[in-house]
Length: 190
View 1 (cartoon, rainbow, N blue to C red):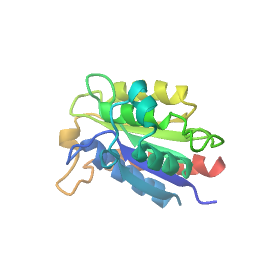
View 2: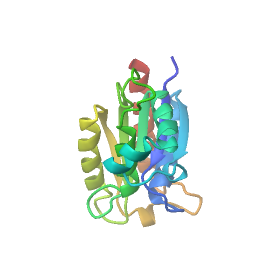
View 3: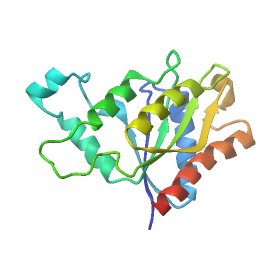
View 4: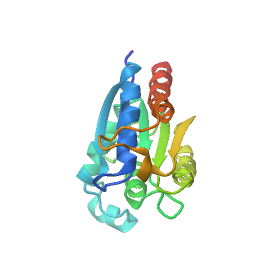
């Protein structure tokens, strides 16, 4: 069985270090035999989650599309920037909407049922976004996602990439690709 992975980044900024790091991890997953669907969260217009809004309007169409995509994939490859020691509002809001049941599909499995995830982060700071990974890990665990111990946090990201978006350090590049490959291997087993 070919594992199907969904790759996305919590940043919507063009030139994001996290997106660049994610792209390299995707290559590791592809090399390990996975099928990878990359998506950009900012392409899915979701209002800030509000229970009253949901009660009045229901689940947004973009949330339904994302829920379908998530259900169709075995694993999640997530790059999470560090915003003041946490992950981004874009990523949090997406997860909040995805966790909502769809009244039109009352018998559907929860979106995060039997999902596994691998986390990456990049930051100009020395910690490389590890705090955002820790915060995200807690939320994913609460949603029932198994988060792999294989993860990578890239510090001093502003100095780590060459002009072509490749990592200057070959060992770092191997470690990042290993995260994607590890997720592909684990997704094959589920």
